[in-house]
Length: 152
Image 1 (cartoon, rainbow, N blue to C red):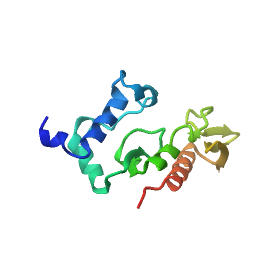
Image 2: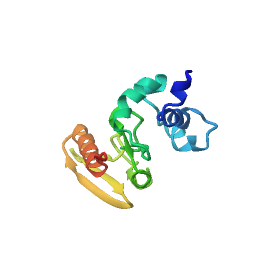
Image 3: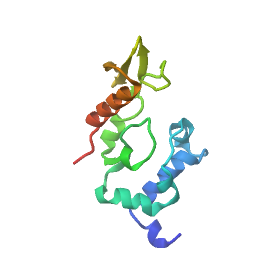
């Protein structure tokens, strides 16, 4: 590894992300790797790919955040945000019901339709009744994207 890589402002962010997901001896592994959170193959194997995807929006003082805390570290699911915003985006603040008759968290079969619901800040919310699982997934994603839009 080159010294200039270790001195890059995003190196410690990238290294910590990898360790959270893959090093079982880490204190925070139980919240990431043990729960199945992974890093996309491009980033996991190449620091410079992470830099290429994330450096243009990086600002000193912001932290790397997964937009949907139930999904992995990928370009489409990561943003730079304040510590406060990140703390409000934790799994315990925005969870999708784990009981599911469809195999997809937050979507349950209701007759010939599908109910889409979640818990946001401890409030149960039914987002709607849809005709297909695919529509339900889109509805969940749309809600999360609107609720946790990236900082401008």
